[in-house]
Length: 127
Image (cartoon, rainbow, N blue to C red; front, side, top):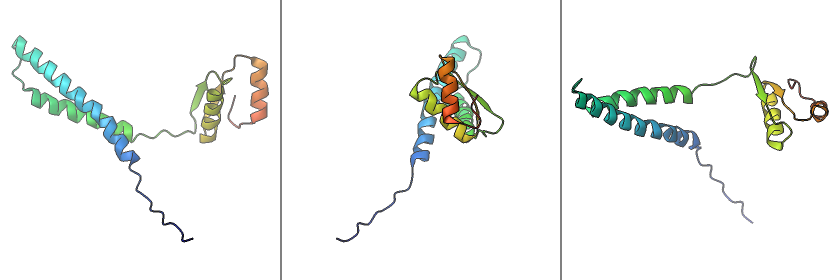
């Protein structure tokens, strides 16, 4: 049998994630601009166009979105409290955070079970 050719497609998940994060700020900026422009014009305080306000709010919201989208958190020196480590989700989260380098404070409903779990898993930064 001939070997099948596997074509690797470029990973566009980061691009789509960024576009999805920017969609809500655009809608929010438009809504706030229309509301503020209407209120200011009704009260006679200012004759500001909604388009100018839209551009102002759009630039601010997209700037904040891009800033937080590119923000990276380093694990060394950071601690995380995970409650509900009795469940699979809590235990898996504690395990993953420990692997990433966070100091994990795990909360259990049963003290004896928690001690046994911590000893059995033997994580370096799990307390």
